[in-house]
Length: 429
Length: 163
Ligand code: SF4
Image 1 (tube, rainbow over the protein chains, first blue to last red):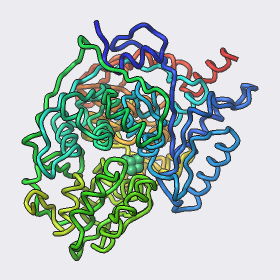
Image 2: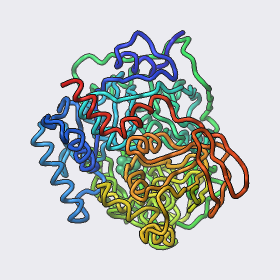
Image 3: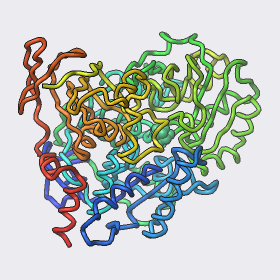
């Protein structure tokens, strides 16, 4: 019997000729990522060594990445002190893949990892963040874990007790219509599968539409795979993966890709033709409460958000700038834009997008998580409504449990910024 | 016998259990105060220690979905509550096992607040309604971690074995 991509990756990482769904394996970790919650990881890591007589030592400092993004710059002395502790740990342990609060190499963890070529096809990547699924976009098996599990990985260099997950094959065909894109595809898929439809499973993406899709779009769909409960999303590495890693991440060494066997076994196959897809909206307060835009257009919104690890890349900002250039954000609506990394921010400056957006009335914020989790900046007022290109709309997500968050693509968010109500971008075309 | 102190629906997220705005608080000793913070009355009762250890929170499908924040487990562990849910999201389940939060997967569970439950090795008995519900046993792979008393002692033992 053939193997899926994730089965092949796990077999290799566990040193086994093959694995099957349900096998328990201990794969070697190729990359271990944390953000500010490294403060808790460090605490648990020191606990592991307590009383052993061994000096706390990470297994391989070159395989650990730490990126400050959730609260940058720090909003409170408590956060600042957590960040200070992490900085000291990073220095003491020689962790080189560290991205501090900086304007030249900062950003959101799920953008920094691809951008710097830290993730490669075939890697096992773990991260103390549920959207670690993002890195499946580069053909890696990449999944979220808790802080204590990360402390274990830092100690042992393996992920203990991983059950080989079953895989759902998602085959995507057709050309996206104008103003419809990867975000609409993943929202539609989550609506079809439900928030737990892929629980404990992997979504493996195939089809001509995926093959043509840029790495940016692939990151968006793998990022949100977790919203269907998936352990990970994965796009098997291909020409586009190699192009991205060479041209945009500057990788020079060989980039072998892992592909699925033709006779690999899938628990389910989902087929989607995107040629008739409408813009999709995830309505409060669940990501699987997905409706075509026709059913919610006209809903008044106070805050438009474009950014995050889901849709804060250059192509997303280009859509926003193209829509808003020479026009104005509606009165009574505020528009917040936060690029996914400082590199993207700089590129958007070069291309004039930032000025286009500012002149239209948008506030362009620093790269970080910002309004996406609403703990730091961009919180909603009581009973306010946000329309956002981020990935979660749970109650309280944007900092206020009485607020409503609708999720959409950059095209929908930008079109709606001009009107102050949820607006179909296809109408203005 | 344990009383149900909170009965919830499907898709209870870790944002609900432990709101994101308290994420700068990380130490397991400090997180319990923020459990279900936006359910103001319930949070106040937890903080007032109104419930004995072993009290039960009942959830529907996909309990603990969303963010991987481990505070969502340590905050409940701090109150020594037991979670009985129809199904549990992957990272939350793993975090619970790692931290020693007692979770029971019980696909058919029906229980309301105030009901008295008895949790046996393979069933949950609702003594108030007289109905019994089968448990799904936790994955065997997690057994070693639970037997060791959580992931920290488990990892410590593995490290010592290597050294
Ligand atoms: S932008 Fe939002 S989803 Fe992405 S890492 Fe930050 S908080 Fe998480």
